[in-house]
Image (cartoon, rainbow, N blue to C red; front, side, top):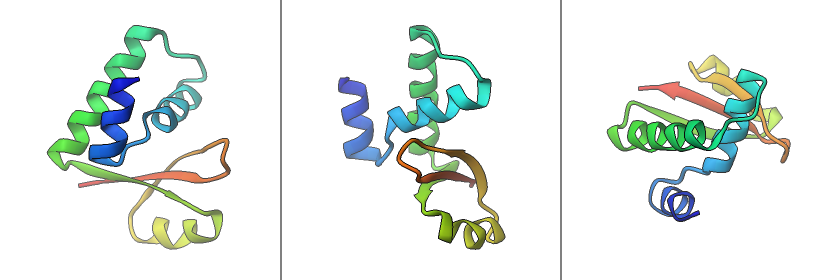
Length: 86
């Protein structure tokens, strides 16, 4: 929980949403070790500035895709997670 709080407050990363997106991509639930590794990699990637993630509404998606962003997942909140490699 502390890692999630730090990531959200300092880096603007919602690790729960990252976890959900990864589980959907893999079509399985992550075990604790996989979850920690995912979180560490995501935090490292964001700190190094090698890419960006964003949550957008469906109405905005086409514009972002046209600008080079990549679809990741639709979250339970109905927001769409997208990313762009830097």
